[in-house]
Length: 267
Image (cartoon, rainbow, N blue to C red; front, side, top):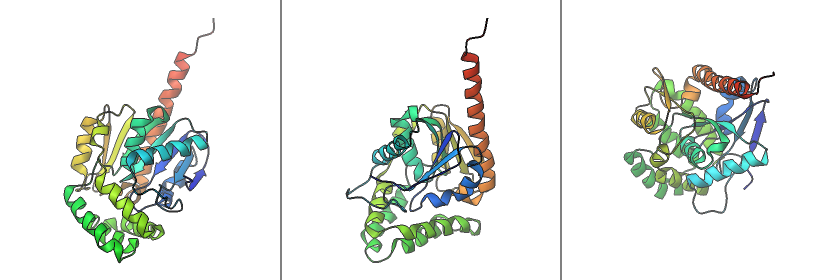
C-alpha cells in the first residue's frame, strides 16, 4: 500500500496520526512549530486524503498499525514520537502494542478506546442509508455538528468538513465500519511505552474514557486543557503545542542524560 507522506524539518522523528474523516493537513498548526526542532512526518491513513482507498473489504486497527510500520521502515525510521488525534488514538494504541520498540513516546490527543454505543447505533444507521445518497462531506458536517455543537468548536468542525471532501463513498463506508467496530480497551492494559493523554476537560463525549485510560495504561500521564472540547490540537493549538513540545523535549533530555551516564568514564 502506497501512502501519501510529507516530511518537514530534521532531527528526532515525530509522527502525527489524524482522526476520522481527516487527513494530514489537519496537523498544520503543529508542523509550523515542531519542524523547527524535529523531523515531522505526516501521512494520510488508508482510505483517507491523498492516500486513497484499497481493494480490501474492511479495515482494522492492526492493519492501520502495520501500515504505519511500513511507512516508517520505508523511511529508515527506527523509532519516533507518536502523536494521534481522536480516531487516530485507536491506530496509535494498536501500533504501540504491536511495535513498542518503534515508539519513543505515545501521545493520544482527544483520545478514546471506543465510541459510545449510541454513536455506534446512529453511525451504523447512517452507513446503511445516508452513505448511499449523500456525499461524505455532508454526512461529516451533520455528524460534526452533533459531536461538536458549541461555537468555540467551529474551527474544529470546519477543518474536518473540509478534509472529508477527499473521501470516496465506498472508503467512507469502510472507515465508518472500522470506527464503529474498533475497541482498544484491552490494548490499554498492555501498553508499556511512555504515554500521555491530552484532552479537553469539556470533551463530554470521551472524558470518562480518558480517565479510565489513565488508570489502565501503565504509567500514563493525563493533561486536561481547561474549557477545551474534543479537537484539542485545533481548538487550542497554541496551548497544545507548548504542552506537547515540553513532553517530548523532556523525554529527549532524559534520554541524553541516560546515555551520558552510561558511557564509561575516562581513567
